[in-house]
Length: 395
Image 1: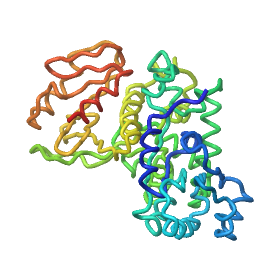
Image 2: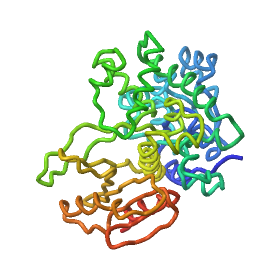
Image 3: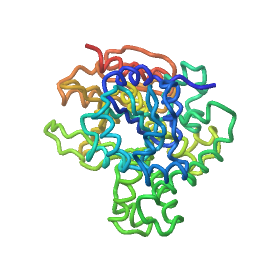
């Protein structure tokens, strides 16, 4: 059973305005499925096919002529033939047909480099990440427990048919992450790279110390920086930047590290079941990861660039997540506990006092089910994290 994606109506609308639409995101996030569902009359061409890729590289004009269609063409995994974009530009400028070219790509660094040279102003770029909590709820596939969702993650393949989760995630890491990264950089020792990934997973929710990470892995600082950049551009890790607004306090300037999917993180940590998540030392960080990335997913599904940060001063006072929209800042604390506790709201109260905001405009997303509006903030169960964005985006 295919799961309906929240981004589909936005995609349909934008396709009436731009001649080229690029859908970017990690492999297996559902990009090609989404494109074929929304644009059912377009010709579909996968550039994963080596023969088709060679044809597109050797004779790009002939390739586009062969697959032309009154409705349009879907070119899947366009990063394999970035040179094709120059020829697409020529067609676009000549035909001026909205929604004709639908491109998908799983390597942001390659696609964006080519776009900046060719299709600027002619193409809309959307980002599709794995499934949101809302999408899983709407399809009646949301796991019954928070720990199960953390362990399983959000990749659609794991919800469309019965699979062994740990095997799927480890295969994903081997087949996709390693191959994609090696395509654009020289990774001599894959064992060291896999250790690097595991060390990144072990730092979820923590301030990123690149020097420490490099030393623990036995690589140089510059290699560690390069690998982090590649993993972020491949939609594997997310470096959450600090918010710099100065409330007369010295602020931390290091980013925090998260994974775009907690299922992959669990596999890298050696977690083999949802029960192991319950007692794992990184349980709090994994739940925090899940909620913060879900907010990113929801904003991307609305074709909005997420303005999401964290806040921390040099005394250790911290807000897990700050959402920014214009002049509005919405602080969010994430707690894995299932029972509401007044201590959950302490950081919100402290930050609100510094920012000159009402504490009741802040949120605590916790591991329970009940939603409450309290005088010291909103309490929101993990299944209802969409309420945070409803508040942020209200007029």
